[in-house]
Image (cartoon, rainbow, N blue to C red; front, side, top):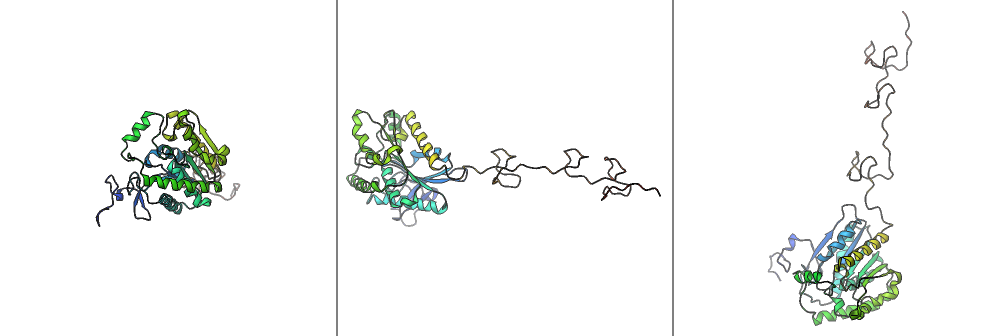
Length: 352
């Protein structure tokens, strides 16, 4: 713990005062990430990462959802990444759920009218299920990528990948955990799995389940990753081809791209009833225009701009309607003999 008066710093030595963060109920600082769309956000999406990793690798997913005008946010769980706490040690799995609800509540307070979605991978999938189950009416839907719903050492970690490039990238990232699975941590995972098996029959919120087909050597893994959810998932479950392993979003390009397309397609359908992604712009200005001449980009219906009706004796370029001229003078005359171009009615010339 830091000395009194010392600024709190990440495990990497960066002051939290320089970083976006929240402080949980135990007084620990949790590093946060936010991907905010340029347009008004249409919904909130909380991302729960897996065991041993951190929220950074979800940048590509978040950017895709940001393009849909969704505000994506995440934090590094206690004992992970740039958050405080002993590495991969947790006194109670409920701490992950509690911190997730705290972060979600903070964002809902800033955007009270927006629906909330959760996206979780592996252990983050378990956190997502338990978080959404605690407040079923608070969430519009949940996306689960290879969620941990039964105990299996492989499915609790992000290490199992199909290609060496992602494995090397994981091993070279200092924010990831590179030690072994602690017995105390495994016990907490087992307790979480038991809770998940109890709550699954009551699940009513919409969800998308993404998991990979596996080769013969990993048939057991296929059964254990989300197997309990299969009867509920029905057509909502999506099993991807190409035999990917566990971390689908970090797989070979063709696999990860399939995952991203499935995610964006599901979120598009789930948010189709929400307001348009961008405000309607003034019809005389291109979509890139920020404001109409009146200073607003909003209009309830497209309005055609109507130019003021011009005097028939003057060309369309005339800025204003000209004064009515004396009938005895041509249209080019600027003034009558009395010094005025105005007359209420044409008057015939009367001889003296």
